[in-house]
Length: 346
Image (cartoon, rainbow, N blue to C red; front, top):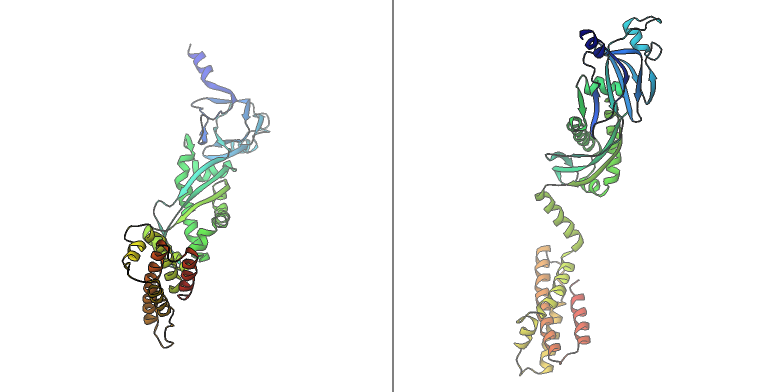
């Protein structure tokens, strides 16, 4: 019985590995106290590597294929063990299998905002996130640099290290390029390609090939985003005169829909006012609204005058709109007068 147990545990004549689920990058073949039979069959499937390690040193590496393990197919191991060409005895060696499949949808992101120097905003804190994919291409490098003698090494084990590489490279890129945040956010594809090029040598050092790298979002902290939104809004609005004109024109339809708004003000004119008197008043106010600001006026006084004129125009338009409601002034006449008055604000 003891002899049978010895024979059962002694030899391995077929070595192969089937990945047990997703996310495994490398696994040690379960040898225990077994020895590999000389001439044993090694099967390495597509998207796999097999690595033979002798006393802590990487010996032979096998890509996809079917191999018969002899001194001819194990040249490095043969050299390390000083085997001669007649060697045919069982031998010991650690065997590791590695997956070369594409690892998809790996997420990266800034767990905390990173501080960069921006041309537009000065020192800012920025967040970014996206996805990337990679594959293992050099099993010897990966074993030597990353996995070592671990029984099993997974994608999750590597995620933290790769994420830190991405963030460090991103920070360096910002410092070197000096790209403003606004340009970066508007050109995320180009930003992703540039960062991918910077990361590829770092991945290669670990025996990995970066297949794709995507920047999905670049953002600022909430308080700074509000400042940016305000700046964008002012750029859209333009100068004060155009902004005032826009505000006046926008408020008339809103006031007309509310009780006590334009119609209410118009009603307050009183039934005793004649058409001629009302139109004369409206025209007089329009002339005041269109008066030019003196050339020597300061920017502050010009702005105040513009605001006062806008109020007068608003009052005039409210009165005229009331007359439209009473059928005294036609809608076409009102629209023409409104365009004339608003044109004088520009």
